[in-house]
Length: 498
Image (tube, rainbow, N blue to C red; front, side):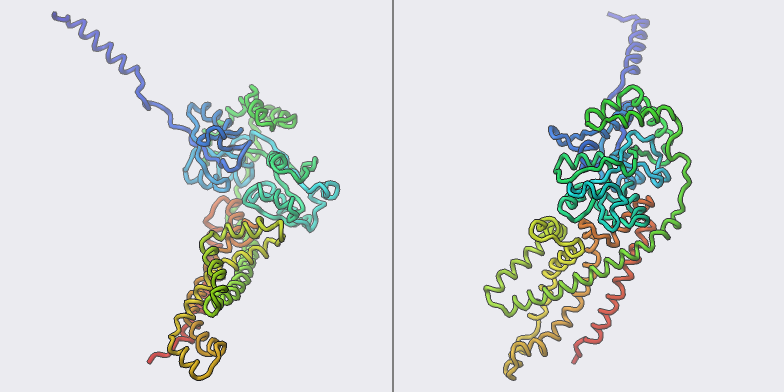
């Protein structure tokens, strides 16, 4: 049967129209809105969903979803350490940073920052016995107050150090400050009320003072060039404040109160008068100059810590090496076990065990724990260097010395020891340089050494270029003279050639 040409043309037009109107998978679909956050921060910000650890939940998760859907996109979570969110955003790892980020002038200089979506209070936590003694920062002159580094609270403590004589103690997380407070290592903790109340529910052992030391705000950040997208996000956030969506989210996570309602009312009334808008950019070099004294002090702490730890390592290492070379099997067995256990476990774990794990038995100051941890760790490595150097001395020399009637102590002092020292000098120098760099790990024990001070500097400045360069220069200034001295000693003590 022959189909008329007009019918064929109609069929072709119909098929083309259907194809044109059909959206193929992925065709014209907007890319997901990748947002960076830290699930280790936990509830109520961002946490892994207990029912499905591959997903995250929290009020920041809901806010990211609101912004993404308002922009016609789907949210996609990217895990990143909280302290690295700003740098990762600048690198382009994601489109939006959102994880309890605090509104700060330095943040607005480097990013397109949304209107604050939550107002928190900076509160003091103290032990119950100090409830009436430490009510505000002014009561804590000469006392140790802990907080999370790179936060508004840390900036407040730095100001209080100069004006009130408070001793700031910086931490890399918001858990250990409260543990140290209960253990008596701190006199108070200053952090936002959300974190303080969460820690109180989790572990207890302290009280939160009702009087706020200050206020702060959580914001979302876009790259600096994405101001248009930031403006769209502001419209979305204001709409969520107006229609009750944000109130519902915060209520579900038990962080809504009347002060938050009053804050929303002020934001909606002010509309475009966003806090921090129009702030002048600071000069990076000028900021660097203000941090140089702090970096020099931290470099001094690093050098003293490393010298003390290396001294301990040499003394213990010599004892362990002598015991393994000259001791009986009963002595050698535990010394060998010590060396293998210490070398086979991470130094960071050992620092945690000494500082936190043994707190119930002996409560060491942070600096003492750092010296002990690094010293005992490197003692295991030093002992192997000394043992190998001692055993490298020719057996014929030792037998000749014994034939001459020298005692084992005389042989060690006059024959074996000097030669072993020449052999051990180079690896000892390498170990000291390595220990100098490994001292950066003790920041987990609240010791403000060079790398930790540099991290604080970089966080406030928003760049690692200048802080990193200064930090590297200071490490080189400390390590290169040592290497040069070791080379001179090697030349001076070099065994004569035949």
